[in-house]
Length: 367
Image (cartoon, rainbow, N blue to C red; front, side, top):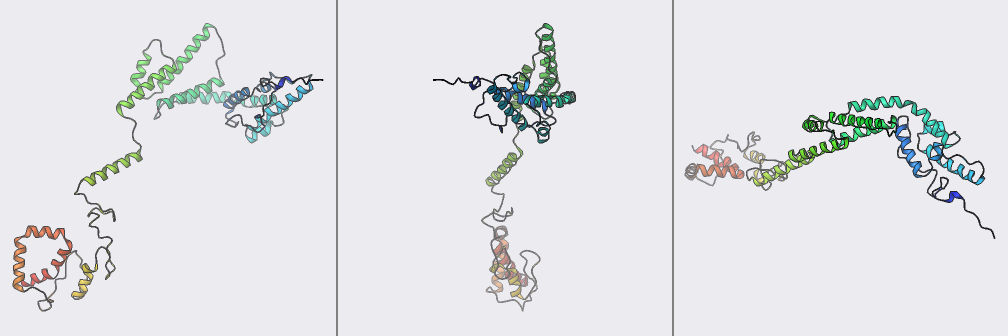
């Protein structure tokens, strides 16, 4: 009775182990390789291959076996899988130029040789961006994050070689001081006092401590002066609401919700009234001036409000229920109570129209 010996690559920690989730169409990095992002792409891809335990296929540490045929076949399967991962994370033009490479190591070296030549140009642009980087209208956090990303990208292109000697420690401290100085120089003038306090400290704090001190000053200033302004939309809404509340508490302010006019209230609105005689709006049949003009003798429409035709002769006056003596008495009472009568005329427009009609005309003829 024979037993089958398990292969070494069946162990999950072996570089040749293939998990059921390791598919050719898997996307390992979020950004595709373009002509100007090789530095960030190669770092992201290196981390992804390290997680998959397949980085040895691109850095040359995992060679193809030469004796065991089964192991050779398993290595070929893994190498093809890594090639599909690399090709799937590139643009169409770049992948078409490296698809014919024999293995994943060849693709990796081809890309390195092609795009690493532009490191000098990229380093120049990064140095220029660091020099021009200032806070401006941004917050301290946004400014620091932008500056930190530029420094990290610069270190990826031109990193300081690892060394444990005393000189390396001094150089590292010098580079850290340069970053702190650049951060303080890019701050706005509102942080002049804080910047002066940090520079006067001995020893000079490192970059992260300087950032924490400036950030604490910014938060304190926002709390003290109330710089967290309300958005424009919210401010407009607040102003409108306060105006409406003030208008509702002030009885003298008039506003109609039906016709959006401010010369009368909603309960006194006459916009919904319609005359059946002239089809006009704002009045009824009983108070139609056009109908009154036509009835009184075809006089044209009055050009001024509440002014009735005044070309009647004494013989043409229509019948009136009061005598001449009664009219004189009525006028005397009206003149004696001028103040109260004027208030009544202003408060009740229909009564004023009636008085400014036949009665007012007849009073002129009597006098």
